[in-house]
Length: 380
Image (cartoon, rainbow, N blue to C red; front, side, top):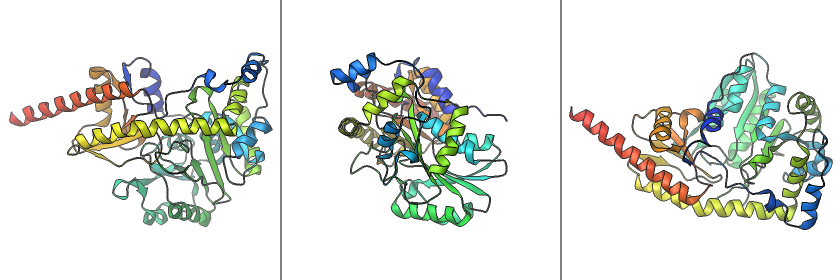
């Protein structure tokens, strides 16, 4: 089996710590260990921790705290993974065989698309439509679903658009899956980072062949813990544990303990409140910037996530745009081609506001220079 390069992850991994202004991240400014050890007993617990092997699927206590985030879920519905990335990998590995078909939401974090193609499955895009404010066209579903459909893979709230599925869309997608016995995988790692309103409802409970994945990276500001999970039917969670044994095998002991602290209900609420405060404070910067370029950029406000998705009405290639901004302006963005849709780009606004403003100014310079070059070319 040959695995295609994961362009987005390689792009960020290579350049995020080498570029002057990194606005490619999709989470908020990370918390520190000290933020989680806000009482002497917790600090002493961590300092006295023996660094042995933890329970490989996560302790029952931690899995119970994870399950409490989902309606009517219990510890037996959960397994701990090394980030949401491993969670998505394990579900894909468990389900997909050569000849299967996967209906995959686009634009999206394209991990599952790459895995599906590597496992020999055919990927059929379920496009989110800008004219529908980044909602899927439900009339397209019957043309995508066949008897070969094994999996419908969603990201809700969506990366990169920040859109969320309506109850009508969720019902229609689950009904379409049920007709052919397909599974649904909902990557819900951005739940909790809403710009307004309550937490985005999980898909959990809408269908019996359903997996929900999540983690502490995006809405919690704890990406360095590499804590993720899968919620699913207990029999399938047991099967996934077998696959997990061949992958990361187990979380680290510090990860296990710090994740347990982060998901303590009162602390969990404070962490989510912090995230929402950041995205609600910073998003107006992105909204006003888009308005300033209304003749050039298109933008639908996100409902969740510290990410803004912009289209443009020029002929720029998004990969070339990303490379020129990096090399000429010292700014790292995510080109749209890395998320399945050229002609767009993603900016993360959950980090330092001054860095964000400075980076946007550099992008202004780049766009002005591109415009002048285009005018000069036409004049010739």
